[in-house]
Length: 336
Image (cartoon, rainbow, N blue to C red; front, side, top):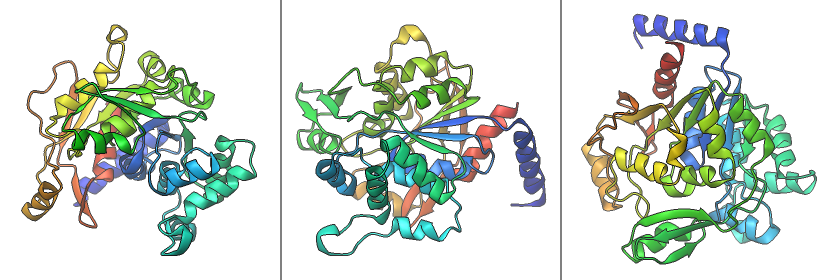
């Protein structure tokens, strides 16, 4: 960062610090935890609202064995908002290498244990957040058991978050519609309150059908976003995801979200944050072997204002959003 960039960054953070906006970030999976690391550098009033539909991996195992909500995405967001130098970071990310707990993370087990001594899962998340002294708050979107369902284009109905992309690939039939097995599950009241009081709302990035859209299927969540007077941003994914968004453009992602909403209510967001950067050739080839590609912008939708930049960074050989640049562009828009 050159001197002009440094001064500009300092000035932006100074302006935002005075306003101290209330920011709500909604999503799940790796995508949400990545951008939280950028957003937390600008405000202490940061709330992450996280989907709890995961039924695979270590989280799914704990959900099945103990009947608790899946802790994995919650754990990732708590760690993203914690002090980066905190020794607890390394401990919570530790995965057991063998035995009956092979692949399970200590953080998931900690949340499961905290759930056992707490009044409910929200209380467990809150107390775990206190242990790590996080900057902000992490909220599950609901305390109900959230079972994701999908209707594929061939008419077949699939149950379970981890089964949906697998079935779409196996049957060569894309997802047509997402819904919840119990359609009227209630949101955590604190999530609705956070959305109502927000100055900025950020939706995504993350798996379109299994991390982003599920939050909007919970009763009253989309309605609260529609009614909010906040600046509302949708962060598009950089890469397509096999079984979910094969061949999707940026516009396809947006239309998929719109298709799950009552369009009579208007626009869910005002700004679209989208990547215009390219991948190194070797990384592009690596993703191509996994049937994933860069999400392109073909025909920008006129009803949205686009915030375009090269948001690509590489992390351990994987494509991620540049959380610092992304946060800077969002807060630049906010202070205009």
